Image 1 (tube, rainbow, N blue to C red):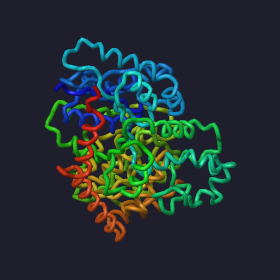
Image 2: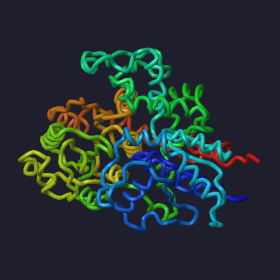
Image 3: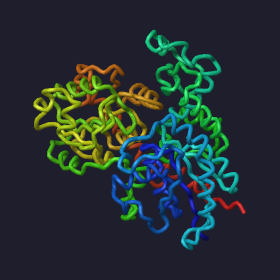
Image 4: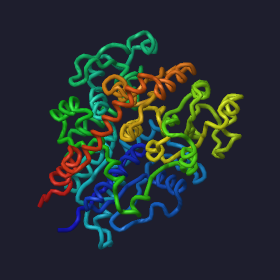
Length: 491
């Protein structure tokens, strides 16, 4: 029986690409041929950050590209994310035709090692793949690199619009207490507030691109053959029970990186899709610190902040007295001239005078790092994060409690569940202040609340590991997904 051939296509943003790569590697371990599809722009970024041969074809695992219809960037100017609203429009209007053309090419490829395409695994925000799958008479599974609670939050945005809850009447509703309104009709989400739902609900514009894009994509996903989530049953059972009643078959196969971390395929293990070059000195610096002594700080690939936000975080970290590793992307601060020479001069232009003297000997700043390895390092005791789901699930699996500063999209929902439902995080106000940062760092590192959070996150870490072992829920769900959806004989 020939191996099945899965085409995997992520939404063209860093966290989505990384999560889909884990799924692709996992399917490859299970015997699938894999064609992984990036946009031409992101493909170039990966080659620039990781080397010109980093995405060379391997036996039964290859990378291909499609255009994204966005303005073409000079090869020397591809170190920044593309404009997200414009990218959402492009995904909706311009991706279907080149993707179908690629599928046709793959089916007529002279490569004898690859059979015709047997299934598609696409990002859940790429609903055009449903039409493509229908055209080629193959199944399509939608992978959402989110928590189940965030997917349920996204799925209720349309109902918020129908009930007149969003868009907001004017910007005063952002600060007059309206966001504290309890939304009591969303099944499976007790005491959820409007502010806890995805950030797109806070718009005042009925034509908001993000709001309408997400409503469109989540409504269409009901026509997919299956839904895949990077979570595990024991973490989100109540919400999963609700979702299972209204969506196609749901397969929780997370945390996916726990499966792929065990791979014995060394060549495949080395393949990564980071859009920024990792600083290899981060792990060496962590080696020089005592166990459970370091705060790791990373706001992900999309979140941005004002220079005043950055200054407040800087002094909060400095005043805490704790060692820290801080990832500062070149585009993290709004309104600062881009400078891609990650050196002392660059950081000194955005960080406050006297900061480096204050932290001498106990702080490291870098532009990017290997996050999973950092979180697993024995010296890391806390994680200051933007609440992206990849970051949260990786921190949970490393047994590291969090300080949470939600910025965008699903992050407010993730924050609510980390702080209230799971008890593994402390939230920092969006209008960040240095005293609050200092207090939270010290609480996580040595306070009573921090000890309780550590205990709870270790319990969840153990449950996550159990789910991926033979007979565990994610282990069994993965086999069922492959058997019933992705490689089922449809002749």
